[in-house]
Amino acid sequence: MDGKKGNTVTEIQNEDYIKFIEAHQVIYGKNFHRQGLFLLGTVINSIVYAQRNKSSSFMKKLNFSGIPARRINRLVGEVQNFYQIYKKDIYEEYGIWGNIMDRLQGIEESSMKPEEIVFYILSGISYANYIGIKKGMEKKEGK
Image (cartoon, rainbow, N blue to C red; front, side, top):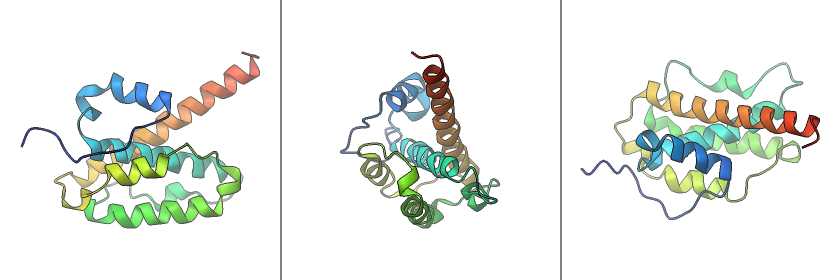
């Protein structure tokens, strides 16, 4: 194997996500499953943000001990269901679902460890949260 995990035909449109993946080229560069999990995390973050005034959060659905690769398809379905519920409160990144689905093709057959999968999802959640805070601060400062 040449180190290339998965294939992709779509291009990520969000410049912030592109910068993150390029900054961490060694980890994400040619591993499209990792990129897909990261992008899935960014969508989860938008759902969690939309739920900020609720008593429960989508984060409770994540098993922080690990998520087996064979369970990713079901998790994507749950994320899409919650996305539909909160759609009016969420800004949808152009092409994000195509990017996620494209990059997660065949992940159930991958050798990724459950802890590793959670790490990449949490990375996406954290990074999207950071970007949101940064943009909020810039807006406050009037930039």
